[in-house]
Every structure is written in C-alpha cells, then in structure tokens.
Length: 67
Length: 453
Image 1: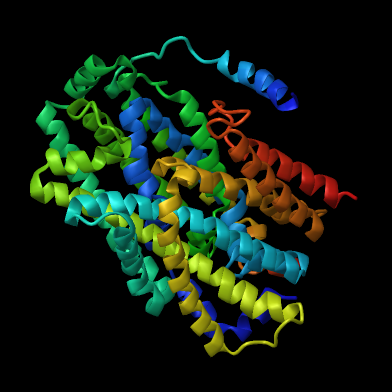
Image 2: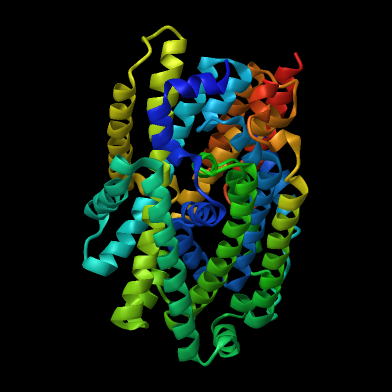
C-alpha cells in the first residue's frame, strides 16, 4: 500500500509535467543551441581553471598536509 | 597515516598505476575522453537518438555539469592528496582500513556491471565487422583491452587512449560528413526526419529519458573512480583542470556527431528491431567498406579504451587497496612484497576481464539495452560515492563511520529502487526518477546524520 501511495504521488507529480506535445523546432536550431551550450561549458571550465589556479586547497600535498 | 609514507612503500606499484604522474593536459584530456566515451555512447546513445531524436543531445549537459563539479570540487583536490585510488583518499582521510576495503570491494563489483555493458556492445560491433558475436566477441574485446594493460599499466593505457580518441573522432567526423552529404545536408536531414516522426527534430523529444539518464551520468561522472585514476596520472591539479576542459571540448564534437548519426539511421532504417543496431546498420548499409569499417573501428576503440581503464581500477582496488593495504592494516596478512602485489595486479586484470564475459549471458537482468546497463552502473556509482566523497573532501565534521553509512545507504537505496522500478515492479514506469535520485538523497542523509552523532 505504501509503495502504491509513493507511486501515485511521485508518478502524478512527474507525469503531470509531461508536455502534451513535443516541440519540433528543427535539427539545425537544436544542434546550434547545443553548440552554444558546449562553448559555454568549455568557457566555464577555463574560467574555473584560471580562478582556482592559486587555490591553496588544490595545490600539491595541501590535502595530505592538512590531514 | 600519511599517504606519502604508504606510497613510498609501493613505488613500483605506484608507477604501474599512475604512469609516474607525468601526463600533460592534452594527453590527459584525451584519456579522460576515451574513458568517458564508451559503448554506452557509440552504440547506446546512438540507439537512443534513433528512438527519440535529436533532443537526447541535451543528455551531455548534465554530464558536463558533472565534469564542472569534478573540476571545482573533486578532481584537483584528489590529485593534490597524492594517492592513486579513491579508497586511498578515504583511508588517508579517515585512517580506517575497513572503509578502504569496503570502498574497494564496491568499486570492483560495480565495474563488473559496467564491463558487461561494454562487452554486449562489443558483440554487436564485432558481429558486424567479422561475424563473431556473443561470448566469443566479449572474449575478443577482453583480450584487446588486456593486450597493453597487463604489461604496460597506466602509461600504456593512457597513450593507447590518445590513438583511440584520434580514431574515434576521425571516424565519427568522416561518417557524419559523408552521411550528411548523401542526404543533402543538415536541413534536408531535418526535413526527412520530420516526415518520419516530428518528434525526431523536437528540442524536447525524449526529455524524460534525458532527465533520468543525465542525472545518473552527471553524478556518476563527477566521482567516477576510473576517471580519478586518470586524474592521478596527471602532473598537478592545474593540469587536471585543463585536461577536463580539453575532455569536454572533444566530447562536444562526439555528441554532435552521434546525434546526427542516430537521426540519420532512423531516416535510412526506420524499422530496426533493436535500436542498438543503428550505428552498425549505418556502417554496413550506407557508408561502404572503407568509411563503414572506420566507423565500426571507432566504436571498437571507444569500447577497448574504456574497458582497459575499468580493468586498471578493478586491479588497483583488489591488489593495492585490499591485498596490499587493507588486509595488513587489519592484521589479516603480513605486508606483501612489491613483486607479490604486481603479480596479483596482473592476475586481477585477467580475472576482471574474464568474469564479465560470462555475465553477458545475463545482460537482460542488468537493463537489456547497452545504454540502460551503462546507466545502471552510473546510478549505483553516483549513489554510493557522490555524497560521501564530497563530504570527505569539503565537510570537516565527516567521520569514517558517517562516510561508510552514506555509501551503504546510497547503494541500498539505488539498487532497491532499480529492482522496484523494473518492469512489473511496484513503481514501474517512473523512468524520470532514476535510482541515482533516491540513492544520493539517502546517502547524503546518512552521511550527515551519522557524522553528527
């Protein structure tokens, strides 16, 4: 009974948000948006790399020394 | 117990598992990519694109988010700690051999599931290439993966990864370019796909599958021990961050290519009984012997480069973490010699490659389609390690027993949810609630609750 209840609550919560229809906007648009997203991720990784380069918690042996 | 004092005892073993820690960002990034991009991608993801369309391409975003979490909070910190396995770090952080042994046993077990998925896909590829499928094909993949790893360890594995990534990206780009030329370009492919099923060109096609698998892959990627083993072979934490950036850039190209190939396969062969056969159907039926073979070899390279990484992680868990460290620390055995540890490492590599060959017969119970076998591995891994590892790295109040409780709770919750949500189970059909969700929630609660006692 408990599992049926969980299924009912979570199931309805998830399934009710399912869009009635998919939105066909085309292969070119979707892949272009994907390319933009990929570029943003690489830029974010590069930014994080520069920003954290001088972080003392991630220099060699810092974690070992702290222990 | 300092990690360095442990490692000085095992200089030869360390060299075998870390390639002397001199791997740079480009080679390291290529190796991270080769490890990440597996049968799940080349066979499984193409198959899901075949079923759901281009919208599944968004599954890469949570994977890259997992890489960002790793860049910011996990990989550089683990590299700075100086060990060469995840259990190494846990043992040094909490000073408990039992936790090291438990973590190593879990890692060795869960990677058997993962290797099984790779072998299932290898069977599909080799059946098309040379007419050998099933168990013989799995055995052939095992031999290919063992050929360099048994003798050369991490160094051979990393540098063979670079060649395999070159083959992977070259094969995918060639096949994608020729496939698009044949159908008249990307716009023409979109029009043809929409005539088969408008959902194939929808940005949100298959979104529930994207959410479910993306969560599993993203969380699993952030703490995956086979990626950590590559991280620990790099020169320093800065190299790790740069290497992860390189890996994301290469994966972006791979993701775009396989999205196009999956949709192309659906347009060309709209009634395949098994979506996992989509890539093979394209290679055999559309591209001709040269490009077709190149595409299949690219898929085989992805499989072999992942399996050799997995075998090294399993061998380090058994030979280094359990045999050389946990058992002597618990007083069960004496300190073994370097020669004994290296001998057991090579024996474990062979056993870890051989056992999943037999498991391929039970692939249906693990999820059936390659993508779902790989997703089950990622769910179990993320649910078990994500919260305990992040807490160990960043929450000073975390205790060893809290981390152990988190690992146990995460594994039980994720495995339990997988069983309950299987077809015919009481929560069947909730594909949007991947086992990683209850798993990570239970694991985090257990870490906090037990550590605060």
